[in-house]
Length: 219
Image (cartoon, rainbow, N blue to C red):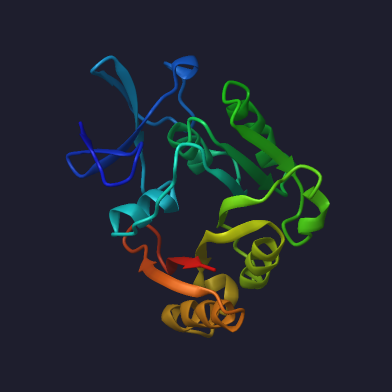
C-alpha cells in the first residue's frame, strides 16, 4: 500500500483506498472490499460509485487536511462522504441531503462516524442550516439539477472561508441536454468566474462517469 500525494488516501494496483476507523472495522458502507495490511483495515474506493475517487484517478489535486471543516451538498446515501470521513480524522463533514429515503442510509453511516453531521434539507436554501453549519474550508457539491451552479455559488457565499476551496461535480445533461458536455462545463465555469472565483482545474470523469466533470475553484 502506497501513500498518495493526498493525505489519508492510498493507492495499490491503480486503485484508491482509505483507512477504516478503528470503530468501523469490518463495516462496509456500499459493499466495498476490505482488507488488512500493516495493522490497518483499508477500504477500496470505487471510482464508478464515487465521483471524487474518479476525479482523483483522473488527476485532480486537492488538499483536504485532517482537521478540515467540509460542507457536502448532495450527500445521498453516504458513499463518498464515508471516504472523506476516513480522511478527515479530526474534522467534520456537514452532509446535506434533501431525500428522506437517502438520508436513512446516511444516518446509518454516521452512527459510528462522529465526524459526519447529516442534515435533511434543500441546498437551494442555505439559510435553513445556518444554525448548524459554521464557516468551512471546502464546499463540495454533487447535485444533478439545472441550477446546480447557482446552488453552489449561494452556499459558497454563505459558508466558505476566505481562501477556501470549492469542488463541484457537474452533470452536463442536467444543465441542458442541447449542449455538448464541454459547453455545459464552460457555462458553470463562466458562472463562477462572474463571481470572481478562480477556476483551478476542470477534470472530465470519463470513463467512470459519462458527461460529468469535476471543477475545482478558489476564492
